[in-house]
Length: 325
Image (cartoon, rainbow, N blue to C red; front, side, top):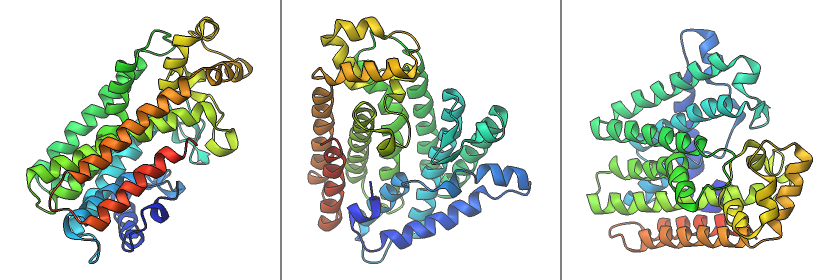
């Protein structure tokens, strides 16, 4: 997803460059080794969706013309550092060898180094949030707890063919949607808007995040390795049965008989093919569309937000769902 081009707001590219400079400063450390490790994934790039959401929320509150206030740039950097720190930890959990086209930190150095560097990034995020006030710091701390809750919930259902929609949705709300909701809320908080406006921005980010994760999970069973940058069916291989698989399991006894254990890659390909023979993908996309609609409705129901910025954000939501076509 070409984020900047999709949103199409003139100041976003420049403000994201300001975020990059803030991130570079945040990961720097007196210990050169720690600085190198902490900055490893930062240098590999990424969509920067979460900081972009924080910036766009600020635009929605103040208008995009003057660009984002410095406080919004700081908040945007804080949420991206939380995201990066969680990736360091995720790669240890998943025993991943690569991330964003480069060796993962755990593969290049060690699991211990990756865990400690991830902790360092979370600490730097907390320091940036604290510079914006106790309310922002408290919100970010709560969100980090939600990330952990969602990830732990997901781990409880690895290789579980009886995982249901409710536990799946609760897990992705924690591990993905909560940080996107917080990104939007922080963008509004630093602009001093009323609570009802903050709540609308938060609902937008939450439903956008739910849509984003469901679409990502659909693509895992419909995309190719070239498109995904990782093997198709990687979630199935890791025992994470996502929404399209959960729905497919209701229809396919053959799929249920095959899952529930670690599969080799040819078996994964067969399982993904079985998912494609059910209505599981279509049903999951329908849920993503529901969250996309709720995201757009959150902006429509808010007062005092910039109409042009909200229209651009709705375009972003529509673009997420279109990735599954």
